[in-house]
Length: 69
Image 1 (cartoon, one colour):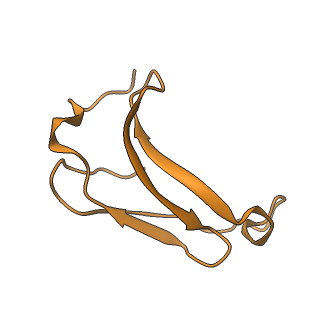
Image 2: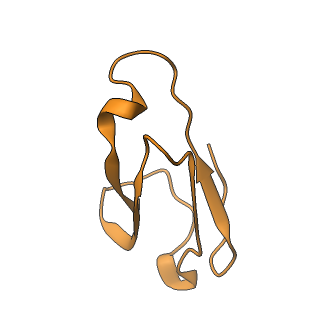
């Protein structure tokens, strides 16, 4: 997993593992920063995972504390 800090650049990366569905078949995806209870905290830019393998963003400092729930 990744650890990011509010107000500082954060990069998330992904790689194709060769199993279906391949990233080339998925294409454009929406990303967001969510709580452990799946509440959207911050919408992130969309990215075409077929051609891009990372996304850099700045997490909202007021998103809240670290949480697994």
